[in-house]
Amino acid sequence: MRIKQTLLTAVTGLALAGITCIGVTNANTISAKVLVKNLAKTAPAKWVFGSSKKIGNGKASSFVKLDSTGNPPALGYMFRDKCLTGFNHLELDWNAQGHDPKPIYGVPHFDFHFYLCDDAILNMVMGGPDKVPVETKYIPTNYVSGEMSVPHMGTHWMDQLTPEFHGKPFTVTYIYGFYQGDMKFVEPMISLNLLQSKKPFHLTLKQSQAFQHHAWYPRQMRLEYNSTSHNFF
Image (cartoon, rainbow, N blue to C red; front, side, top):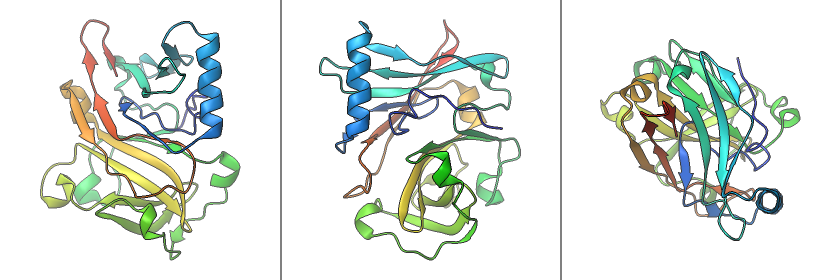
């Protein structure tokens, strides 16, 4: 089951569920700039929140933090700890039994997708082997292709140096998604165990030398839990 949030999807989908994207790279996104600057004009506060969506026994919403020029130095999602019940929001998939490869990702976790294209394009993404190469300049260092495309998503490219590929339990990872050589999404995957630990988490993200699409690309992810409000950021 998927539930969509419109605010950050309109900003070319770069907020990460439960994770604050900080220090984003400006790839000259015209549409994102226009939207964010318009929000800055209409909202007196530096924080702009999307509408709340019910998830499990809690609620979640997207947010964007605006600086004085209208650019977004941070964007992400806020959700209550009661959301950790196996439901999802936005382009988030809940995997109660994990998914392939089972020895690595066969644990309960959330897949948070942020797409760079609309549903009409995603509906044309076919499953099966994806043999179309991606130009090297668009691939972050040490990332390798999963080769098999997932219908309505694409092919998942993963960092082969992440701990879960070297005998450590999977906790969190960051994926780039392509289809027939074109980037379609970015996706952090977060284990339920990590969220339930309520421990702060920070990850510096690898970026490619160039980008195919104009967007705000995050350089870091951060997960925090507020014990007073019971919210994850």
